[in-house]
Length: 196
Image (cartoon, rainbow, N blue to C red; front, side, top):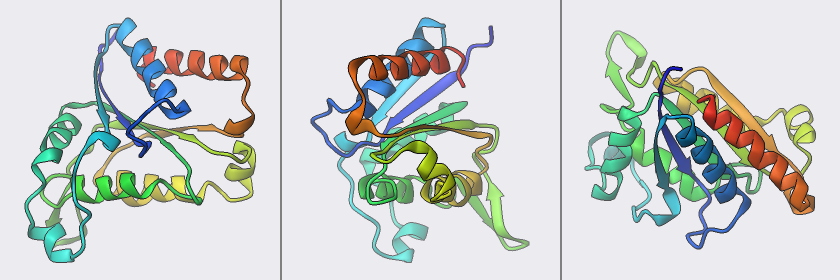
């Protein structure tokens, strides 16, 4: 079995924890560790960083010191797992702010005068998105066309070279019983074991 370097990014913004997202991320990590993979985790809600407010800050401003370990972990990882709830049809604002800070020019991509989209620096990495939501996952996928997840895949992760990107959509979370939750946890452990 090939050992992979896996980074799990917990994107639920509640610093108290205890949500389904936290359990799913933990299950993935347990499965990956038990299978011998190297695993690191980041809990975005525990980080203190400002939101970017200008293009100048994004292009030339200093990365907050609290986010340097995130960039180092992303550079280290071969496989990235992002776990977050769908809020108002999109990722929570804190996670979006995290992506904006971490995926800076010079780290995630290099601007190139000859290439309008620059050079994708984070190529060679795969990702899985684990997204919880109140609506049925099939409704989100086929009626709403998973618009916010597709935007993340295309406009952030794909833009910096991360591929392939796979999805695990967990719907109707408010109605899940204990056995439903356990079934999802078993699935995440299997995915972790396979670094998938």
